[in-house]
Length: 253
Image (cartoon, rainbow, N blue to C red; front, side, top):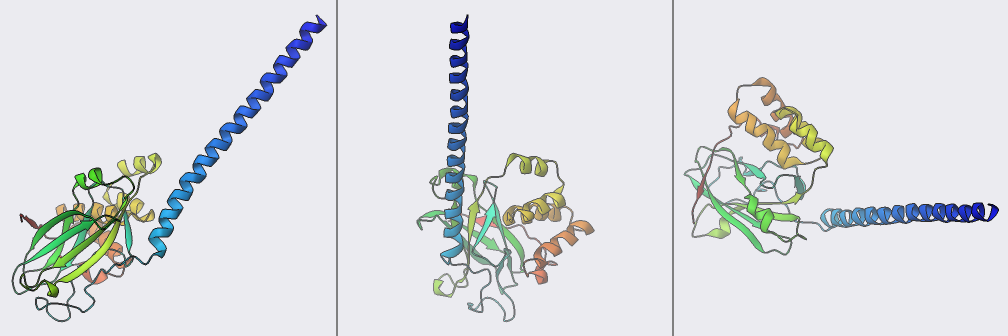
C-alpha cells in the first residue's frame, strides 16, 4: 500500500509540474504574440508619425486661374498627414468654392509603394459646395496585405491643357480594425453617437460620414447641424459648417 501511495504521489507530482509548465509556456507564447503584434503596430505608427509624410488639406495660396481670390479648395480632414477609417469603402469630403464654370476634379489613390491603385474624375458644379468621393471597396480587397495605408490626391483641374496649374490636395488613409466591443456600440448607436464614438478613436473619415449622411437627409435638423459644426470646428474648419453638401457625378474617362 505504501508503495502504491508513493507511486501515486509521484504521478500526481509529475502531473502538477506538467500542468504548471504548460500554463507558463502558454502564457509566454501569448505574451510573445501580443508583444509581436504591439511591436508591429507600434512600428507602423512610428512609420506614419515620423517620416514626414506629405499632406496638404488646403491649396495654400498656390492656385490656377479658376478660383477667386480669398476662397480655398479644402479637404475636410484634420491638419495631419494620416487619418483613419474602419470602412472598406471610406469617403473623402472636400469643399470646392464657386468657379467661373464647372471643373473636373481628379481623384488618385496610391499605395505605400507609390503604385496607382485607383483613379476617377468628379464633375464639380460651378456653384461650389461640399462634395465627396468614395473609395471603392475593391481597393482594399485587391491591395497587398502589407499595405494598410493609401496616399490620396484631389486635383482641381483649372485648365486641361495646363495641368501644372492644377490645385492639388493630398493626405493619407490608414485602415484600422474595430474591436468587437466598439463594433457593438456603434451598431446600436444613432448617427450622432456613432460619430462621437468614431471621433474618440480618431477614426475621422467614418465620424464625418456618419454625420454627413444624416445631414443630407435631414438638413434642417438642429442637433445634426450642431454636431456637424462642432466637428468641423474641432479641426479648424468652422467656416465651412454652413456650406451645402452637393451630390457629384463621376466622369468616365
